[in-house]
Image (tube, rainbow, N blue to C red):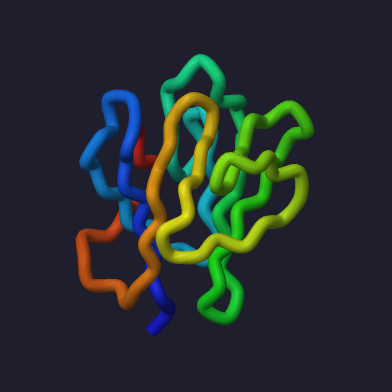
Length: 112
């Protein structure tokens, strides 16, 4: 079974909220067609993608102007995520956890 990526909110109104991502590819953005819809003034309609390959998670910015950071460093291409990394999308920061899928699963079109 693939390992799930959990995003734990550590800033904004999402502090303490956990989001389990278990799809092979998950689209994040402000557009209603995204898998995870984020309402944030700094989030683009198609902001980033979370992708898993061989149990390794990656974040991929989908627009050159997308604000995506891992551990405070800007991401401009595909970047691997490790457990404990700080992932910032727009103005929201998440701490990442990677493990076997046991928690609640995320369905399509989750809105944050």
